[in-house]
Image (tube, rainbow, N blue to C red; front, side):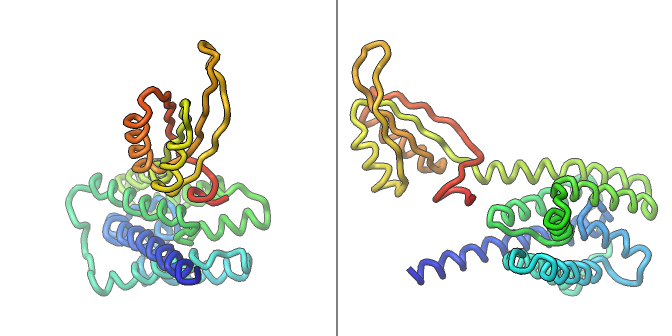
Length: 285
């Protein structure tokens, strides 16, 4: 059991590391060179780098570490260790990339293409972090503190801070950069939500059959899931029926559907898609 817990912990941190690397890569290679200032600490650092004698990566490291300390002091044990770890990885990696892979200009001459990657990579990384109960820190930490101390809605707090950063960008950058930043701000939250929704997709089954035992045996022994069985009655025939309720990952759902179609072709299946199932084996409460 202890070995299993250690293995699960390692897997959790591998996923958190992957999410943090995606965030750092998107910020450094696409957001920084184009001065896309659509919110977050990285957006603020892009603006500050224009008026201070420091690079955006250096400012990002300092501000994120400062917020990390503030979050740890303000939230104490409620401050997630995985969030602290992800913040460190994003901050240090972003700063180190300036040394390992210095950029003097954007990678391409297509700002719209780079904006897409500046949104997609951090959005995918953020979705992975949220999936594993973590975040990349930054303004997320301030939002958590505001919620804890003042009961402020996290979403509203983040939107207000992001809008404020874009407004500041308008004071130091040209109109094109500000318009791209505004577009990025509008698209960012939608893309993050879409990534999270697709990562959480599951299939819900309601199977109406004459004999639930072989179906339940396949679910529990082969698919390593559970199910609920209840008794029913056909409205037209009046004959007794059994109902099997279960929730599965998409790959498991395909296998169960194939099994039922082969073993009990007369069974009636209702299959729906859900992006939010809370419970053991799915999302944590």
